Length: 273
Image (cartoon, rainbow, N blue to C red):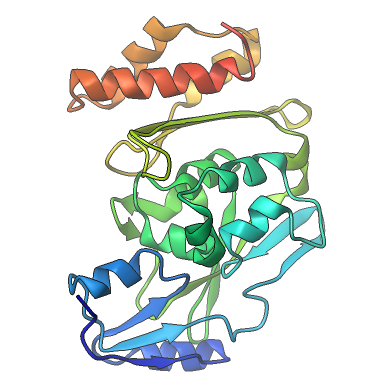
């Protein structure tokens, strides 16, 4: 099938983006790797698409004041390739390399993935683990939202009407982080059935353990993360399974097994069992 008729605009100011989004049936398009197929199947029928790549800074990667700023329009492929004037945290490049297929990575963007907020998307879990901050822009306002608070549920975010993601910011110390990441897919290129990430920054006392692909927002396990940082020991699969069962009481046996396996493997990449 082909999409229903639509118009397309590429404003070059935040105010113009807000004005374009104020109309009925308007929707932002980033890489289009999720929206495009939905439009082709006519599951989504926006009357007007608003592109963001003409906005200043949307496709730039910069470093200032101990922070790395990644424009929301930066593609997965650029992160994978290290196509950046500043050094990116190794975890970003590793995760980008495993997103879907190269054709998708060539077009898909980090901001588009986050705004779509699919629970099984790699960036949602990864950037929660890396303690990223999102810079959101509206007509006349700008605000910062920690990634851990951005996703409210499946396909639901903290974005207000006529607001968009401008940049993703990470501390430069994340370059030195100890990290483990694992995801389980039925086949290469599919969204994950389970994923997990552990990030430790010993010099900052930072420890975060995140489980993704839960069907909702990423699950943080702060007590287990603190235990791992304190003891430098792998808790073991039984402890992990019990923690997941407590936080996800509606998960069935198969889902719990997959999530436990991903979590076990992610931790083992940092601290062997």
